[in-house]
Image (tube, rainbow, N blue to C red; front, side, top):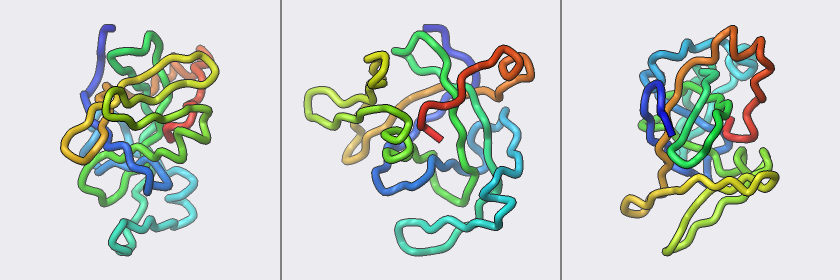
Length: 148
């Protein structure tokens, strides 16, 4: 599949309530004040530290396996690396399998799978992102399935 935009590697995180990224990730995507930012919401990291929500980055995403683009909303926050929320993926109609032989995210409606790589003790997903354009929005591009 042809890739586009900035390559990012998301760490699949079963403890993350939201899909998060450092402000510097997806540099070509503007950060807009989303609902959480407007409400003054702070996130809490694993150590219990409160971190501010700086807004959201509404992206288009592609992976090596999937033949179509998907929406992805990243919450910009003070984190060390991009984190993909397992619960958001599952809520969006996906199944996630972690296994020694094959790990993946599967769209339960279409059966499409995105392979996860294991690096040390972490599972990651390589993707490419770019900002949604007015043309994408006008064409009725589908909203993200769950990786929010």
